[in-house]
Image (cartoon, rainbow, N blue to C red; front, side):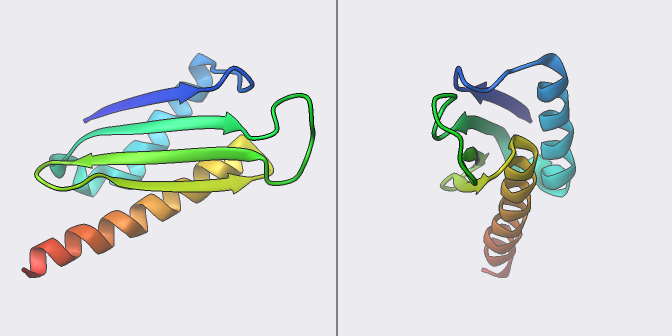
Length: 105
């Protein structure tokens, strides 16, 4: 499984951040890894550095499932870390729901 991390210019994309994102994604989708080819993570600051506000950090995660439509989730939060964790929780629930339904059919 490939994890791609994209960040808009207002988010500092460090090696540490990339490593943390990869570890988080691996822990969330680990049990589905044989069915997922790629996870894209997009990080952004909705208001950029010009404005400060609450819940302006965005994390969008999209998992590409083999033989099925991708699953995408988005989370807005006060910090990038909170947005990452919120999106990871949503992605795990969505994958569990989607792949659980596929097993039932």
